[in-house]
Amino acid sequence: MTLNVLKIAAFSDGEKGGNPAGVWIGNALPDAATMQRVAAEVGYSETVFAASLGDGWRVRYFSPESEVPFCGHATIALGAALALANGDGIFQLVLNECNITVEGERQEAVVAAALQSPPTRNEPVDDFLLAAALKLFELHHGDLDSRIPPAIIFGGATHLILALKERATLKAMRYNLEAGRSLMNNAGLVTILLAWSETNCTFHTRNPFASGGVYEDPATGAATAALAGYLREINWPHGGKIEVIQGEDMGSRSLLRAVIPPEKGRSIRVAGTARMITA
Image (tube, rainbow, N blue to C red; front, side, top):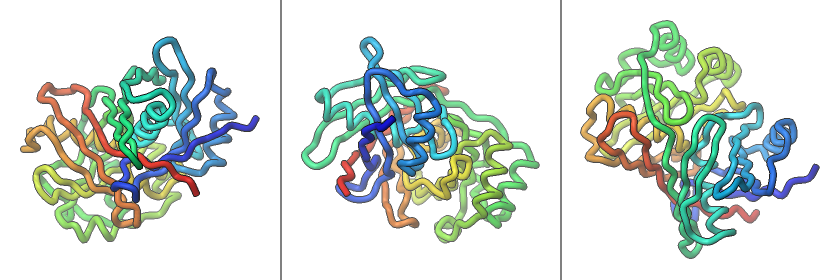
């Protein structure tokens, strides 16, 4: 079965950077084995599959190695593709575990897109998992920013957040992919989010995605939603929004913006631009 997959970089820095995603749109979803095979062939961190369903779209996400419950950058890419095919608008999406929306608006060479994440939540991280994660990245407790304690955070997918004191520590991130895959899969983590706060409203992040067989993602909308929700829970002075710069250290600078409503647990709006990949 041959599928026509669009290639779109989401959360781009204008006409550069961003995180590439595969996007397939059709009348009915292929079977899971076909979607998994296509995602592996495309080779991006995620490929999103969408099929028309009443007034909305049934959506599933696959990494090269597994299905994931939600992917922010692939949702932004899907919003761009739907806007290009159907005109600007807000599109209803039915995921495996919840319903969300994505908005797309054409703007010359790029498409602006914004998603509403699933509800956010967080929980403490146990000492064993924290110790294993610090060992994986060759970090110590002294490297962590005590203002943003390590935690399990959720905004459609599950992540561990490690906030760092220094930008240089973030830049020097390294880990063993196989060890990271084992840790993340055993702990039920989709990614581990490493973050550094430049200001109260500007963060630099990196997102190892070993659970999906990907060393690092240059833009991660689900983790950004989870981060924004966590900052709200710990009463961080975010002023109602944050900007996240990701992918800079891997040569694919990406920009993500999150709007944070005051109600705890409420959906986060994550926005950015998307560009078509033609090569």
